Image (cartoon, rainbow, N blue to C red; front, top):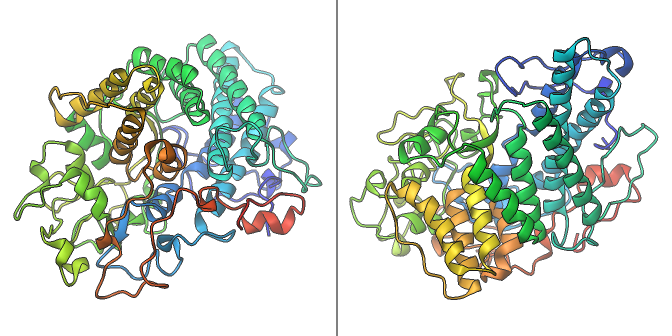
Length: 524
């Protein structure tokens, strides 16, 4: 078994290539070289950075989060996905996919990122331009290290707001092979490293006047991560400062309705629209084992594409509540309905009393590689060129964080940030929601996040940190459990309560097998 903290670079083998940009598609494959021999130039560092991105370029988080929470229901073409593993039934243990994938992907990346940071300070630049290149590589590596640590903290801690709660293993250096026994650090230690790394990165980006590129870690992603980290910590004064900075000064704009479709259907929106940071995909990654849309459907995101997961009824009803016979999702004013619900879906207005709802009510997930009308989707398994990038941070998240930051100070300010998103998504000026209490505002923000960020990997963390404030938890419709053709183990489970220990993921079994001093989370 592997201890993911101490993976040596020379022993690593890349199974796929991830792009941080079109000119950085070469994997780092050192073979038998030692680090000292392999890492001597800025080009070597760039290749190692590229391979670090590759470990983060996984569909595991958005797919597994959607199944474990309330974004999907079991599809009419299901082959047992989600049921056999127990994810859909809220089964969670140290061997489950979600904790294992998050732990290993991030620590594999950190093993390489820390080597970049080590050698960025050792390699002697050959010119002023080369020095700038090394500084930019170091800045990206610092941002990625902060991103990995924040991801680990949020999933594995029992309380994101407590400095004393345990997170994961602090990976702030290159670990020696002998350093296999590591205790968990506190959230306070994690947050300190996260903000220190981001502050250094921002300084390097600024000093080197680095141009914005959403396909690489950049200064606005660094500032957005600070906003995200402060929001997760509950420090809304600082969260507001950094979210507002990104909104006001980045030059990015919320996507129009047409651009929003482009963003998720074909990745061809303008460069200054919406995306703060994304992980690029390459044609060779377009296969059922890795392509983003194939996390929910076998062939393509339409009703004939063998959907083994569908849009949950509860999420559908937030966007298309009328359920009128013959209604078309393409005509609903909110573009997010068209992006989330495939136009080929079969909508049963009497689904709640249907004898076989799985086959009468077919709600196909359209968001990644779908189509605005018809069935000829951009993403299809047989076409190796159409593969959606993974959006890690978008401008709308900054508006949502800014809304959170204003709940205690001004409910109307919080509402106006939600209005800004709705104006863009509905294509015209909307009436701002009216919140008469903090709980109502938190509920409105959590619901807006559910719609805006669906199938992008946010839902688990959002319920974990905002559920109690909003008095909202996992929200599955009874139809999401009902079926005449499937037998759910232990009958139809109740929705996971907010008090469950499962909101802190277990330390994976692979780590426990090697690391005898690491502390498991309660309940596992």
